[in-house]
Image (cartoon, rainbow, N blue to C red):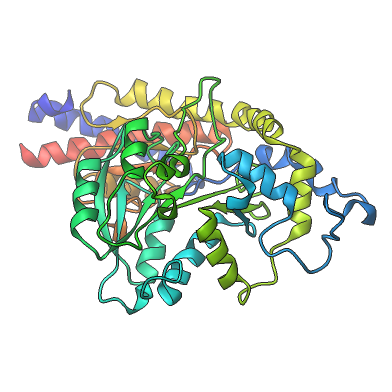
Length: 426
């Protein structure tokens, strides 16, 4: 335990760690682990998707619709069926979007800001104060949507079971300004946890003071398993129906990390009432998304089983990278009392909590030595981690040999920052 070391022992350890750190600085590293991007090998396995439509005759959907032309606002039937099966809902509860589920989430909130929810509430943008519940640590892009639209964010701690439900139930039942809640329920970004059945049921049974309260259920990693034994997630929309709360739920997903991140297909699921309302508003916004891209994906993956089988190829590529991260964390930081982490069964990140007050220092040391990480604090609203300890590691993009170097350096920096903290306290 580093904390129990004497001042002399800490000084000696700092000298050793500083020498190791300086040796890495001399290497001239230029490594990027700042975002959860698929690596080249992952992109390459989707090559045949580009040519699955080989001629003009292949451009017609199951109804005979020419997907090269205008028409169909909410998605071709076979795309709605595929995503309905993936999200475990009915096709009537699905809207197919463009390439980005984040874009669909932004549009959904912007729509509520301008028009209100389901046409029965005052627009959010005309109300004195709007707040969202944000389980933390969480996804920085969710928080940036709120910040860009002037939506107040309320931190709720996230455990291995999910967000603190006692806190959420109290907040939404008492505060009518709380209009929404962010969630990444399976393999959460960045922690990798999956919400327990109890948490999902309690969310489904919420009794919010605001009748226009909505849960934004971002199921980005619904098929992103790393191991044969995957986490199981209860269906929130189906659970909500048991309490008459189906209008409270918006579900989102995409193929961004299944096929091509910049050219995938996104979808959302909601009650048929919500879907009808959204489609009416979309009519003035767009003629519809890229139907050829929808058709490409359906022809390529065919069905849910095809998608799940395909995801095993991704797992074979990225699991060894996760293994490298977890190996170094365990070997270099385990038992020192200066860091903790969660070992995920899927998703795209490993979340590490370093010594309190040291995350910014660790990320700064890494950057100075040529390794770019997600900024410290990014996993909290407004970029402010109150304990300055959470760091998101994104293992997927770098080659494994570079990842090993980055993790060696990460562990050195985590130890060095902790040692310097304790030296200041002696």
